[in-house]
Amino acid sequence: MRFFWPVLLVVLVPSLSRGAVTVGSDAELRQALAGLKDGATLKIRPGDYRGGYAVTGISGLTVEGADAETPPHFRGGNVGWQFSRCPGLTVRNLRISGQRQNGLNIDDGGERGKPVSGVTLTGLRVSEIGPRGNFDGIKCSGIDDLVIRDCEVSGWGGQAIDFVGCHKALIAECRFIGRPGYSQTTGPQFKGGSSDIVIEKCLFEAAGMRPIQAGGSTGMDYFRPPGVKYEASRINIRDNRIIGGMCAVAFTGVDGAVFERNVIVKPDKWVLRVLQETVAPGFPPCRNVRFERNIIVFDRARVSGVINIGGNTAPKTFRFESNLWYAADQPERSRPSLPVRESDGIYDLDPKLDPKTHLPFADRAKAVLTLR
Image (cartoon, rainbow, N blue to C red; front, side):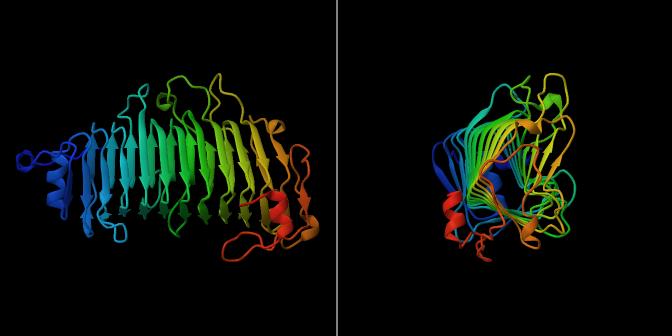
């Protein structure tokens, strides 16, 4: 969505070509945006700002809070910020909340065969998006070489982070916190031909129906690149802590993923799901997932079936290895029923998780699973 401001503002703006400017009000910010040039740095002072800013076609742009400890707060509007076709973009140290649609939107302008490269997002705090419906905290479409680090999303409608046709991306050291009253369909989701994605060292607390979703369901006109025949491929989910949520992870039309060294604590219904939502010709069934060296603590009273397997999937291609399974309320029933035999699984061993960090005290569990 684009927002247009009166032409009168444009003539008041000095050139920002490869320079830096600091602003401290909505009026100054609108003026600065009207005069942006490639390579500019836009610093925004602490304070409250109106949501609904859009930037198109600027390369090497940095938009940042002038004071990292007191970030500027963008409130309301349909979208907090939208950046279209801005390669080399850096956005950091902003607070965005209360949008009706997406908090932050970064895209390729609909040019599905021309991805935008080199986007970095750090120190963002996005909250209270939606609250219900397909409205995302951070939405990225057609972005390659993307890093999202030390960001927090709390309370959202659709996806905390939604990747559509993104490639070579890292999500690290982020926090995803669910809030009552928000639909929170998934946490981070990678779909529409997304590939080579790593999500690591993140914290999930009550992060919705599917706290992590590798894959999903995408209309044929939105896959990137056009014609790709998988929702997601080569997804690595590692060293995360996932507390609560309906399940910990859903593999949905994924063709190749690794889920390793994660700690899962008391999901509400299942530990993992294997699903297929895109059944168009040429799309393989959900397949080729390695689930290994994880710690799973669950209650049999809530999780009777550890894994939920949907139709049109290939669960026999999954591999389970060296996971620690512990049913806290019924330790004798810790061994899960899986679609294939697990190798070197550990059952009935209480990992004695620290209630604050959700990491194991037990040296034995830590050594076996090589958790860091």
